[in-house]
Image 1 (tube, one colour):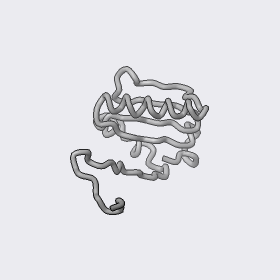
Image 2 (cartoon, helix red, strand yellow):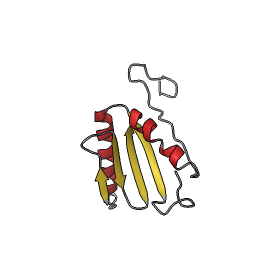
Image 3 (cartoon, one colour):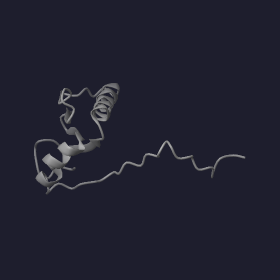
Length: 106
């Protein structure tokens, strides 16, 4: 969500949804770790105990990692309805399905 024209809170919100407590933990830890590796340490992280909504504040960018129920309840997309939204859908592959053979050598 691009907040630059609607708020002084942050320039951007990144919203993502985890499917379980473990998934929320893994997503939020990975974001925080990767930002540290890039030299941009999170200014503040909260919600790691409950794992319903983990907020990673990078000052100009705030990453929100939700459980589905919490994301639907708080509905930040509606709350910040004037913000421009760019959606990225998850495109993971089902590990139980065989990989396509096209494009492989032989």
